[in-house]
Image: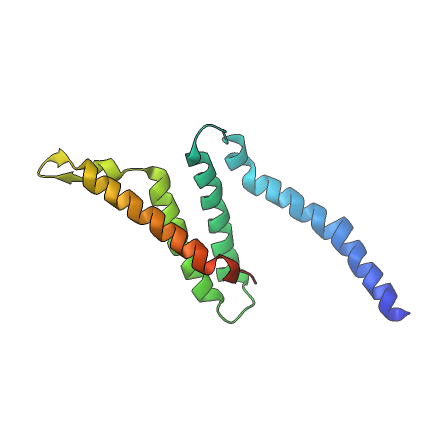
Length: 129
């Protein structure tokens, strides 16, 4: 009987105290990203992904309770930096001999996208606490 009461109180706490608090905190955290969101360009999707990776990285680094939290935070940081580079889309600014080198810029962009896919494929399901 005591176990059922404690379970009931725990679920009351989660449902009526922690979840609303966490929801409002999430709204506050995401307000700028969501406000600027638009449906016509992939860069907005990348901004959302960058923010989520930033939050996950900090979460694992500061509050991770698994033994490999620091390693996971580093992996997420690497992915975040790649996504930031893809979002900036400055690949055509690469110059050779004083002229823009579009071919090499496209090579670098393709390389970043492939590495992004490789990390997601290999690590995504391992990033949980």
